[in-house]
Amino acid sequence: MTYAARTDHLQAEGAYFVLAKAQALEAEGKDIIHLEIGQPDIDTFESVAQAGIDAILDGRTRYNPPAGIPDLRRAIADDVGKRIGVSVELERVVISPGAKPNLFFPTLAIVEPGDEVLYPDPGFPSYAAMIGVAGGVPVPVPLVEAKNFSFDLDVFDDLISSRCRLIILNSPGNPTGGVIPSSDLEHIAKRAIEHDCWVITDEIYSRIHYLEDEVPSIYSLPGMDARTILVDGFSKTYAMTGWRLGYGVMPPELARRVMLLATHAYGCTAHFTQFAGLEALHGTEAQVQEMRSRYQRRRDRLVSGLNELPGVSCELPKGAFYAFPNIQSTGVSSSLLADRILQEAGVALLPGTAFGAGGEGFLRLSYATSMDQIEVALERLAVFLAGLI
Ligand code: PLP
Image (cartoon, rainbow, N blue to C red; front, top):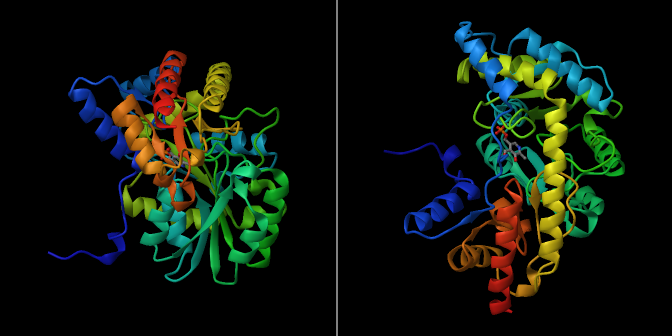
């Protein structure tokens, strides 16, 4: 049998690959600390789970509108509008099973074969995957450690051209935890307008940050709501990864096209999940704040511990739940080091290169795990690195 070339480039996410390896070691009786997985370590908040259960028992188990139920679309429009300081109309909101379809479908609706797409390197692996499926030309833009993992704007300016159709941003970022400052967003917005490009801003970690103010969004800059897709969701903020609930906010004509792609691809998002989403938006603010403070304590401990290790230096991430230490002084490649740390120290983490060539020289550690596990991981890393260097 033969296959269409458009899926030839697709690969599994690095996290799943490392998880499978770690589980094989566990099956042999080895004790592994899991710092590879990018999901909250807590269960979905009880009131949210209960709202989902109640909705199932109330018969909210049938087809519903492809773009989502109006009550949740309105609640999302209000929530996003309030957080980023703009008014958002309901018809701009498309609800989806997780955030991913709202990355994929707008890309399919925007990018013609041969169009260039700028995206962060290292960055979330689905960006390169969806650009490839759309037939676009991937143009990775390096993130710069010294700029807290934002773009070097001179390099960005060199890479953007009339061939660019779409720019993808991710702030707070996976895998780096970097937050793009307002001044950089203003520069990028200016270039997007000059070159008539669309922008996808992936803000799935928007509520997980350690700043006094909200994370700035390019969507709120003048003129940008006509060319921007803001993507966010419930997976990280409300510990709902398996419920599959996300959304995009975009110009109405693009929303109509994305809604039609949804209609023909998966039909609709689960009805009861959306009722759980309503409860998450309305009834969990204190728990979200609590979760954020817990991540902040873990971040502070992990990053200070990493900075004491030989051959390691780590910037303090401003958001998400990942540390992205620089391991260049060890003289070992990211993938070899990550593999040896798993095999010899029993700590599962990801090589920076699981997120693109720009991740060479770095590792990604998720601190969405207990403080105890972080302490043990740091002890094991200290012993391993002392033997290596
Ligand atoms: N965007 C980024 C940057 C992510 O890290 C993830 C999940 O890890 C997603 C999008 C996907 O979110 P969801 O599980 O809601 O589809």
